[in-house]
Amino acid sequence: DTAHTDENGWLFFNYREGGGLRRAGEFIQPEYVEGVIAAHPDVSEVGVYGVPAASGAPGESDVVAAVVPFEGKKIDPPSIFELCAKELPKNLIPSYVQVLDEIPKTISQKILDRVLRGEFNPEEKNIFKVENYLKGGKK
Image (cartoon, rainbow, N blue to C red; front, side, top):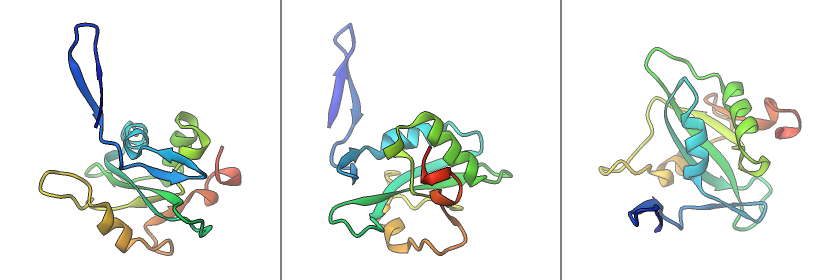
């Protein structure tokens, strides 16, 4: 776990290490990407996870942002990619946005990324690839 203290000496939990993904040799903390996407006005829930990189590079991941819209809203994938391009470094922009009705979670509300990884198929109609929405794949 990583934490920090404030000016009064209070200890605050930041995140648990080990949940990071590696992409192009850099480690990515999913929680950081989730925080940016969670600010999107149509996103009720977000979970970021990795799938084996399409490049086949060992240990590398393509980043997937699973998103659930607020009730009565519809997710516009280009707007998710545009938000990420504006707010995130190039290497943190998800490779895919996956629109779901619900994100599978444990009883303690932790995202079941192994379930998401097992069900991931880039050909599904609810999965959108960054290259189709941002010039050159990333801005």
